[in-house]
Amino acid sequence: MSDVLNFDETCLFCKIIKGDIPSAKVYEDALCYAFRDINPQAPTHILVVPKAHIRSVAEISANNEALVGHMFTVIAKIAREEGLEEGGYRVVSNCGPDACQSVPHLHFHILGGAKMAEGMA
Image (cartoon, rainbow, N blue to C red; front, side, top):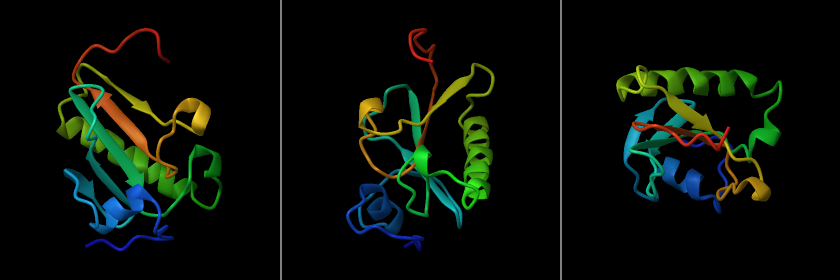
């Protein structure tokens, strides 16, 4: 079981990181955790979450910028390991209810394995 920094006992992703809720883990280190989305929007759909409970992109600051930078290094590593580099992939983070952020814990979606629609970003 992993230690979660700033654990929020009501947060779905904190519970997943702790191992209280099962997930299909793809990657884990001391700072972040990655797992397959249970409702994939692409052939490859992986979520990368910090172990520190940060609510959204809106809470990224000088205090956690190194953590977020590390997460992007992990995203690139996972994309390589999943074979997404050649065809490309999308990295998405929804911020707030109008953007359809369904879990208030910072997370980045890695989407790939198929041609993405032109209509988004």
